[in-house]
Image (cartoon, rainbow, N blue to C red):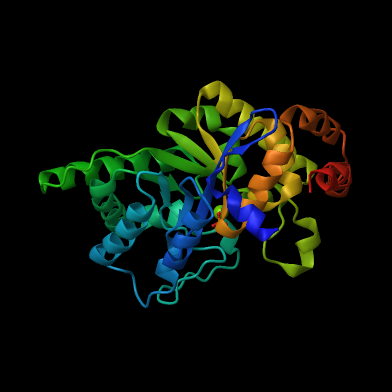
Length: 324
Ligand code: PEP
Ligand code: MG
């Protein structure tokens, strides 16, 4: 069966009725780069740049970051690579920079941390831009956006870095800039944020955590953490519709993209770009190729009446078994 899946590597992820989905991969470790290519990823939808920072013994220098980013961009070129700027805080701690807080998920995380440590951000952005000067396939992705001024300020930092590098003789140009939708305020302000971004990517792990007020890593409430909670589904439908009417490309890069039941609903909603761990790509591609989107639409329609995630799952189960 696994060999059959491997044979799908160069086939598109297309439903029986012709709805095509781009499958990209999530990476962070250089060790993940090759599996992504081996499993037919069409690019990197999420490069978690904090991972190399977490396994280092101090903040990596611009040059160290540059050579790392260049390797990733090179491996995937000309396929796109969305590099997310540092997303520390929350559950992601740096061994050499203490961020102890009583409520870390609501604290100094992601873009908040980067904007308050502008020199670190500028160094990272310069390293990414310099690597991109050679390969041209970089997209910048901003984590944990919850306010419009965050993306405006971020954009200004990038513009400044681009012009400084150009003065230094490195022609880099502005890459596409996108933001993660993982905080409810970003979702609710999407039409007002849209003028400042070229694309968006949904972090369904954090979006679920913040919509449901359930810590994504707390075992006591683990049974309450489910991306099929009806409220999460309402949010995802709204985001897809808004992005469509705004003409804003949208992808989804949380664990949800690896959950077959969720993927069926995402297809029905109209999501056509998912980013997931390399090892799950063949399985999800096989699933997409075995269903027709038209038959999933009534399924989505019925989940609109569900009262719980368990109801949602039991509605989907028969279709999932039929597709397997
Ligand atoms: C997410 O929140 O869904 C996401 C993809 O980002 P991370 O898991 O790195 O927080
Ligand atoms: Mg996240």
